[in-house]
Structures are given as C-alpha cells and as structure tokens.
Length: 475
Image 1 (cartoon, rainbow, N blue to C red):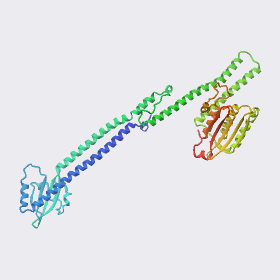
Image 2: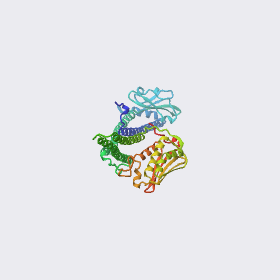
Image 3: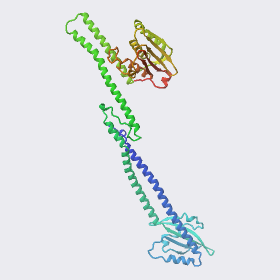
C-alpha cells in the first residue's frame, strides 16, 4: 500500500498550477495598480473641484453683497435635487450666518476640522461617514473687510465610494475569470507541449526483445526532446548489443558444456554394453574425471566473471614488488617452455598495487595463452613499467598473431578466432583477465600482427591514485 508521498508527480498538473498561479498573480498586480491609479485620479479630481469651490466661496464672500448672494444660492436649491456641496459660513464669534438647508442635521459644525488659512488642507480633507453617506470636510478662513469668517464645506462622495466598490468588484471578477481562462489555456498548452512525450511512449511501447533494432531517431522531434531521444537510442544500442552477446554466450556455453557431458555419457554407455576389466574401468573413470575437471574449470571461471560483473567480489589490494611477481610466474612456466625451446624473459622494475592472487591469475592466463600460440623456438617477454599514475605489465610473444577483425572481440566470453573451435581452451581466459583489471580500476589493451606476435598490456593504478579516485568494488 502506497502513501500519498509515493504517488507519482504530474508534470502537466504542476505546469498548469504554476502557469495559473503566475497568471493570477500578474493579473492581480496589474489590475490592482490600475484600480489604485483610477481611484487616486478620481480622488485628486474631487479634491481639485472641492478646492475650486472653496476659492470661489472666498472670492464671492469678499464682494459687497457676497454673503447675501451665497445665502440666496443656498436657499434657491430645488427640493429633491441631490446636494453635492454642503456649505456653512460662520462669523468670527462662531454664529452661523448661512448654510445649506438641513446641514445642521447631517453635518453639525463640530464635526468639521478647525478652520485654516493655508491651502494645504485642500489636498487632504477630513473624511466623515454617516449611515448612508461619505463626506470630505474642509474648513478655511475668509477675510471680509477686516473680519475673519469661517467657511465650512462638505463634499458628498457617496457616489465615488459606490463607484470604487463596483469598480473593485468588476476587477475582482476580471481576475477570477482571467485565472479560469489562464487555467484552460495552461491545460491546452500543457497537453500540446507534452504530446511528444506521449508519442515517444507509444513508440517505445512497440519495442520488444524481438524488435530491438527499432530506433526513435532524433529527426522530427522537438529540440528539447532530441537529447532524450538520442539517449534512448543509445540505450537501445546497448541493449541490442547485450542481448546479442547474451544469446551468443548462451550458445557458446551450451556448446562448451555439451562436449564434455557427451563424452562422459558416451563412455559410460559404451562401458555398460559389456563387462570390462578393472584397467578398462579405471581408464573410463580417469577420462570422466578429466572431463569433469574441464567442466569444473568452466563453471569456476563463469562464477568468477558473474561475481566480478555484479560487484560482489571482495578484493584486497596491496603494494608488492612487480619484478618478483613476474619472475615467479615465469619460473613456473619455465619447464614447459624449455620442452618446446621457448624462452621466457623478464624486464623492468616497479611496485604494483593490486590483489596478489588476482594479479597472478591474470598474468598466468596471459603467459599460458602466449605459450599456447607461440611456436617452438619462439620468445615470450614479460615487462613491467611504472609511471606517475599507473604501473603497466606487458606480455609479448612471437606467435601466430590475431587478425585485425578479431581484435575488438578477443575479450568477449567464449570468443576464439579459430571458428572451428579446435584450439584448446574455453575462450574465457582473456575475459577473466579483463574482469580482474576492471576490478582494480585499471585497463587492458592488445596489439597484434598476423605471423609476428601479440602484446597484451595490463595497467594498474598506483596506490595513491586508486585511493583518491575509483575505489575497489565490494559486495
């Protein structure tokens, strides 16, 4: 049972969410700035009109019959006509000289700020809210024939407030609709943008073990998908190559196991056809033991290769004298070489950082191969060379050599240049050598010329370089 954290992520859902969130944020910011500019502009215009009204009242009050004229204007308003400006004029003692009808009920004198002579108050009027109205209040002084009067003006801005509310609601609705539209667009864009991935999935679904030769090919795919297509094609190349090698390996393994098993079975069946002497039974048993030893060797080599590839083999590298190690191996094969008049020589000096047992096994395989393919009277040279990064061990012979078309495959399992399979060995020797070198983080190379000989070179990293870089494989 999977938890919510184990649910697969949806790229399309993330793209839609991010795109919608970004669109909503941009719309909100843009329309918010627009709302602020419109409201501020309307507020500034109202303040300018209110200031003009104050200046007009001041100017009119200074006329000889100004107060009377203002009073007539205030009283002459029609009943029911909306009042935008509420005006009150007070004498120096604070008595009301004239005001807009019913102003004392709606805007008492005490709700106005103290009168000011400065015009700065025009820009920042006081706000006063009743149950149904919003007013901007200004109180200024006016000089008339040596007397200072107070002029109180209230501007009804209820309409502006309603406009702001409706305008804000309209912008909020616009943001909501824009967000929904952005989500729809994001879903469409995400589906269209991810269509190549669905097409790629359909193409990959058609690839099976029987059709590993199918390729996607980068042509025709979007530029962003082409690296992924190339990576898939390279992966399919590796899979096809591994599948072919596995099939070939299975066939070679069956051949290698079939021959000794057939020999053991055939000899046993022949022995059972009639009574045999003790010597004949001994001869048959010895032959069966020889074939079993061959089978055991093949199985051991295969197990070693399998463990090396799955990185479950523990190696214990140490520093030892390379010249002593190669001379010991040369001495082991010296008797066989002398019987065939083949000389084995060692040269060079150097310390080697490797597992001594695995190093000996790899070098034994190389020397054994060199002896197998070097004719009588030939030479085998084992040399060692050390530099700042690695130590190289080379085994050269004057044997028959290997044709160029076989060199890329000599380290494959069961591969032998002799297609008749009549040569001795199982074709696993060089595979073992390569696996051993790979376990140490080294490399192996081969050079060969037909009828002139072959040189195989093993490179082992020095101890300080191996410890700082690639570590030995462990289980």
